[in-house]
Length: 213
Ligand code: NUP
Image 1: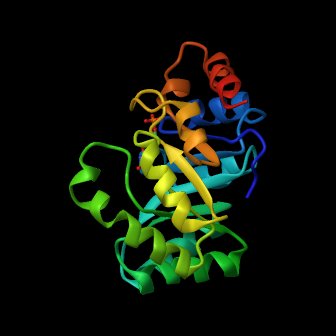
Image 2: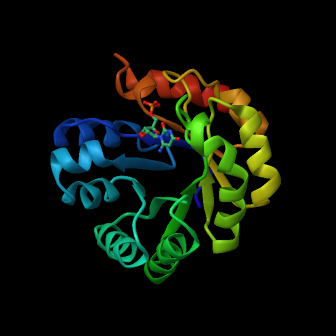
């Protein structure tokens, strides 16, 4: 995994042109560009390959299906040029292992979601997060997604996943602080709207980078 700037751009915009413009403007400031359903549904799967020619892409499809379907989804998006994928851990060991196998075949990275950053995640995911993190580590994922909105949960996940990467969304608009998340043990921050909706995205990214350093 690339850990230079420790910043991952969440590119949740709906226009291909805007996406390519932002990726080009910010590519030297971020390690990866994360694309998910909003952009892929709006612009088509080809956007993954187009952005991958600018910066490495993590496809945030939060893959959560039976093993065979997970394999097909992973193969499709990794073939399109993604360097990494995000999958849900809660679906179970067999489903997550299918993602890990598909990623290994393609030379890509897999990150498993253990607990999400929004308030509703405390209801069902929070109580299961430790077990999910343990299972994800057993499955051989490259990293996990843990919430910057709850730094104490990042520390807990760190104690379970050891050296595996922790990537953390929830900074800025969702209320999380970059420095608190990193201090708690996150390796990289995933940041979207604080940068993409800023009147000056590069300056906003630079402000976060200063806090990271
Ligand atoms: O738990 C998660 N929380 C979260 O916000 C897991 C995620 N993958 N995300 C994603 O991170 C979310 O879908 C969005 O793409 C990004 C955060 O964006 P923002 O709140 O910084 O705009």
